Amino acid sequence: MHLVIVDPQVSFYRYLIVSKRLGYRTLVLTRDPTACRLGEAEYNRELEASNASAIDELVQCDTGSASSIIAALEPFHGEIAGLIPGDDPYVPVTFEAGRRLGFDYSPPEDAICQQLKTSMKRRLADRQVHTPRFLVAGTFDEAERAWEGFGRDCMVKMVDFAASVNVFRVTTRCQLAEAWKAIQSNPCAVVVPYPLSRDAILEEFVGGLELSAEGYAQDERIVILNFCEKITEKNFVVTGHLLPALLTPEQMRSAETAVQECVRAVGIRNSLFHVEIHMRSNVPYVIECAARPPGLHVVDLISRCYGHDLTEISIALAVGTTVKAERREPRAHYGMFALYARTSGALERVEGLEELHSRGGVVRWHLDLQPGDQVQALESFRQRYGFVILEDKTAEGVRSRAKWFRENVRLAVGARDSAVENPRLLLEAN
Image 1 (spheres, rainbow, N blue to C red):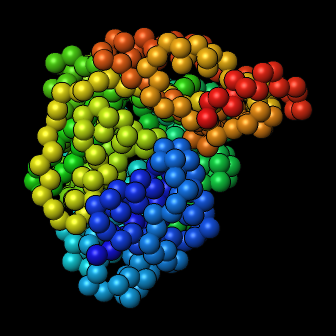
Image 2: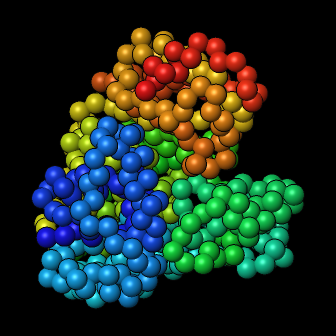
């Protein structure tokens, strides 16, 4: 039987590895076969350390159209075990195509709320799920009036993409104009299988503890498997994860309630969920919700931490197998942190690398750069050039290791064509 993965992106190439391990043939549908092959190779370099492709069948089609997906699958009639979206943009079409093939996935009116932020936020508000106040603007004048209404301090976001792209906190008119221009002009070259919306969401800024919740919904059961603490930079690009999150019993109860209300409200069905929550004064605010695993190799961390493989669970949900996974106590505590540059220029060396290794607790290190490579200052997920995974027996221990890493390990960047000091330090990173 074939497991269909619709345009896998970044860390979701893990579906290919796990599908093969479970005995399925992998059938990948993609708009761009060349980009798909390159993406798989990059993923393999990061975590799997393999040059072999795990794609059995690669079919080019319009992955933004459920009808095109159905047509592409006609030669495999009777051989489809299930369909899985390869990232947020492909959730509605994948679930629609799957339902037309007889699978019990979210219906279109719910699936769109699991991808399009305007639909998502409106559904959360309609179902009285605690979420930051928001307005949708179709023109700059509307955006400016909304910004004024929020006291000239709010978040501005594009409505139909994730991955920390085009997310701004705006406190001046100049910042508002720059944010609006970015959403209109797509400078990050976001590629999705549909025309990008030019609307923007303006949202009340909610500071505090940033969390994500991972789990699954099967039939009427909602099971939370993990809470993860997230670390973001001033431009709201996620650069760190700590798990499990450290929550008081009160925080845990309120966060669990918010997650369950959110999952029910947006209609996630027979799928994983990834819910983003900000906790302010012990009050949880649901920011967003996705019907997919977490990104940035957090699936690998959850597997190490609890023994739960979210990719296996996602596949079981897609093919209709009963899932019995329940929350467990952690076997160890983990942190994962991105490697990025604070200024643009030529990479010279990695500072603090040798001492990092000598301190212990490094599970995995990856840096996809060489001395002299040009790097850009962190602006979006594309400027995360590598990562480190840290482990400790205790929550306090991994947070101590994480603090040292964030304060002492950095990519040293110089001007173009500057001399490389001790390139051995950089090469050892790989």
